Image (tube, rainbow, N blue to C red):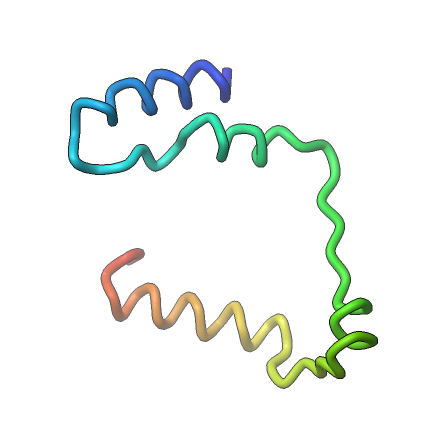
Length: 72
């Protein structure tokens, strides 16, 4: 279903100046069965240290998105 919708959206976007919000490349990302992330390599290789907690980052993102009119 995801591939069908994304293919149709991608097709119709070819007639528009706007890119499709959902396209086949994004569909491949959506149907992955596992997403695993870890800062371990960035910590080891670059000395990365988190400065903002996940909760605070989400809060800031939501507030910014509301301010910009992306969400209500």
